[in-house]
Image 1 (cartoon, rainbow, N blue to C red):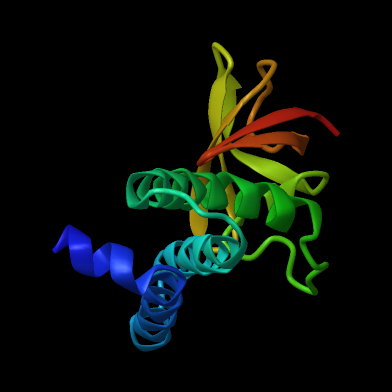
Image 2: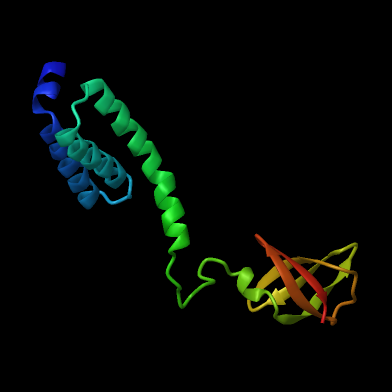
Length: 147
């Protein structure tokens, strides 16, 4: 088996690269893509570098592992602006809005009705009917201050 691997050399990696990228096409999840790119790089390097098959495997494994954080770093820096920045971030979309307290804030905890949902809020004690402004969102909890 190892002998076959050595005989194919660079072409072995290029074929593996095509197979992995084809799998990515049929089962998208952006996982096989990184393995395919790592195989492609090793295959292209193998045309110019005479190295053992063990070294090729190690380089392939290292590139496969390194591709994920590199992609996350790159995609985080080049994220495209969206017209819906609060999609799936409903609580954050409420920051800066003013609401009327449904129940008083007692010992720093109260509730406010926003549309059809009752939200738990924290802030300085205030009677029901007071106007509060949402200043921070942490999951399903909102922090308020007097408006």
